[in-house]
Length: 257
Image 1 (cartoon, rainbow, N blue to C red):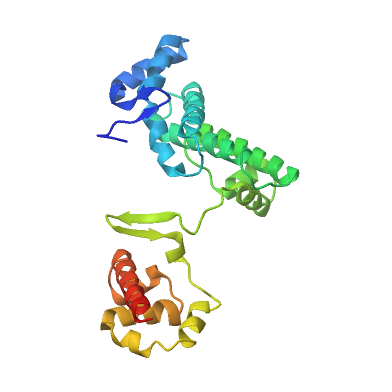
Image 2: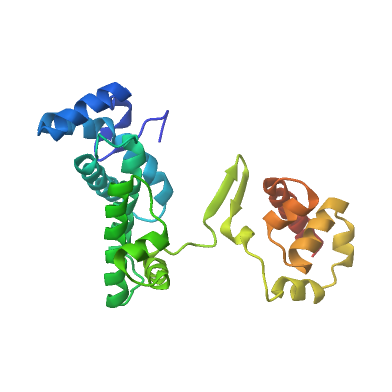
């Protein structure tokens, strides 16, 4: 990305036209009357929706071009199934459709193998979600999907969990300038392995070099095993500040050794 310019599959997003709400409605009415030219124009003007969704899946696929094309399939499905009589914006309807199409692609190309029966159930669940979104213009709950398919809620939840994309502990969950918080920072250690590590080392001199706030954070994080979010709530500062102070404290402790 450079100067807000994005080029994917030969498309420069700076050149994509924008439509007002009135223009979108007029084009959509033409589409429903079978105007293919209006359909193509509407799709091009809404490709930014696909790009916005792709940000959620950054790092999940080696080819952003592949994801973009799959997202465009979801966009076209949304265009073909959108009901102009519903009191809902097209973007609100289209985004879940685009996300669903990309998730389906990632699931089918996932290296983690899931049993055939679970995949079949998950496929039915995803199709049911799409149908319910078409009917209600909103993402349905697990309970509603289970009722629609007449299967237990637990079966729906297990099927969706089985096909969900695995996350890395190094995946960022928050970024504020130079302060990046990773999934690892959100996880507490119930086995107290860090506590044992600290107890097995002579940290008295190293801890003495920390200021009071850094000592408090180290104690809460590594002795008690709290997450950064829990620490931030307890001592009254932001999680980004907790992350920064914790990193500084660990750096000073490492220097002492």
